Length: 187
Image (tube, rainbow, N blue to C red; front, top):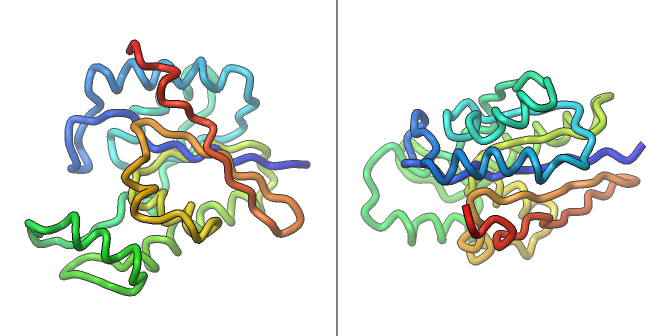
């Protein structure tokens, strides 16, 4: 059986803290995701514990009657626990040096290992198609795991929401971006 994992970056949110809610536009995007997945068979939904991630798949959960499972490993990567005025440059540096770590934060390698473990567990499980919703930086690291060309520029080009499909065939994972941002321009 060909398993598909749909990796969703959360819809537009009001901010970065874990309790940040979706904006009005983000709520409309979450409802649109129901239509986006209307032809897909979904067996499982797993989310980051961050409110914006949960809210992004609540309409899909309600429509499919699939309970959202919360997995802490899908939380956004902590770059640092201190204020970094030059966070953008520091984040860029972590794409080139996967072991680079700032005060109170985790390296790209540590964050990548977290999310890859979730995906590998899902592929090994008996579940068919799974939706996983998380955050831009950690999703970028996951995608980099399966395609080494996925870099800082690719992260910058992610949209809210964004959807990638991972399929596993004979110990090989294929990755495809299936979201077209312009499909919901009028929201």
